[in-house]
Image (cartoon, rainbow, N blue to C red; front, side, top):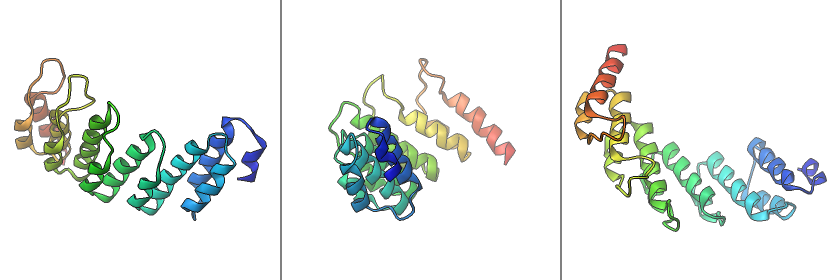
Length: 178
């Protein structure tokens, strides 16, 4: 990390984060130490804690993240997927306009990773501008699994390319490939 201290710009922080990614014995105390030498301490500390949580698969490390929530959200989403633990999606704080979208995406990642359509049911509709919907989730699971019956859960929407018919076509192709 000493090599990073030669630069007094935000590049110093990027350097520290890159070293954190490559450090095998990374700990929260190391993150705290490194952040005191950074240009933006909160940026370094929250990114570093997220990296520690990912390397150790320890969701309690996500709780230490104090930034604008983007790292905390990414931390919970990644660990929910990696640990296949839906309770971590519930820990995503609802403090921003996109928070429910973030929580929905967490369930989408779980459904995609486990091919379990039950997680699609947890996706709540919020608005037309939402990144994804239950139908997106069912489409992904049905076509990856493949399971044509899951396509029945899709609500046809002419404003999107997702439909029950398209889902059945893709799921059929996938089942023939397997």
